[in-house]
Image (cartoon, rainbow, N blue to C red; front, side, top):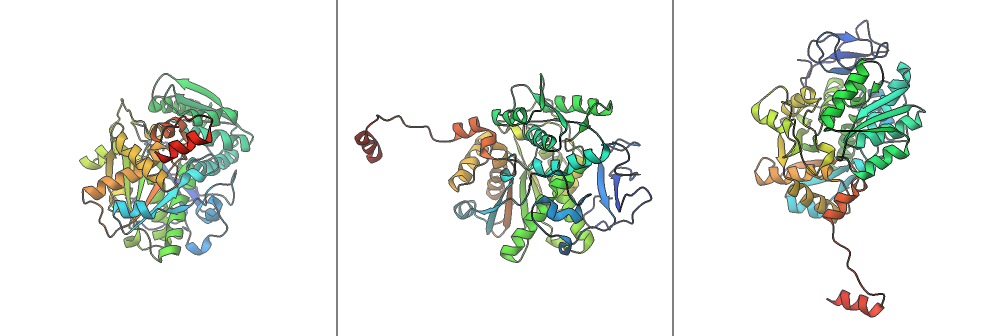
Length: 419
């Protein structure tokens, strides 16, 4: 199977462009990467992956940010703001409280538009230019629309975003609006929006930049490369486990692909690959359901609800790529309540790390897995947080402390402080 952790690298087929091609993960059909626009296999409609005949090694990387890793990407450079090079925070009090040997937080909210989506867009918009398209589009719970609008604006391209009406945080809509995207609010959920955008893409009206687009995930795999490099620099070893929120399962797929390519190049031993562990909200947990039942794909949840709007998704399109990643690395998936997510958001904030609710799902999931004994106290863990606190200021205000009214008088302030 092409998604096995130890699958060897392949020779470039005739359709390859400078050692790069697209390949269907289901039937193995291969396609030229930049001649025609395609998102899925022409023959079986399976998901596509970008393949390389010479997977990059650690020695091939230089510089900073996403394009440090251009040897593992389809181009030397992209439409950039720039992005990547995000912090791997130490959180000593939270580490001790959770009870693991090491806990670090990879804070993707420190990207230019405040989420990991920027990593995918710098590559995806560059591919759009290569293909000669001029209108970009996405369905979004918010972060994708913000990134698409910013990178589309940077590239001088028209952008269209479809959002589920009433279910997107104000901070994210504001970003897309200011970057001059055309915003359509759909009377439906995220999956309904994605259905419409896919139809528009099939009609040739737009270039789709949701994570169904295989080039999006190429940028996102640099998260995994950064985690491994930074962690190894600090500890002279790799993390045992990476815990990450799951919506469309793009990051799970992307990190797994990064690790497979490092194994192919001889840069990473298979036994050193971190366990990929996905976390979903209880009200939107089709990936958890699939893992628990041993399914090869998810079953669509038509009704989803959680305050973690960024992962309020009932039909994760990258599940066929992500599920092998979880299983092949010895990982798992877990669902957490909205209350557990809010508690984790507060815990992170107490360490000075401000994230939106969906981001905190990773820490909430780690806590739950520690309580259940799935994660041991000797494990070295990285939790991925995907979006900045200011992405959802309403949720932040609700989770935080209320302001205290006081008279315009120093004695009144002192009296309050002495209580």
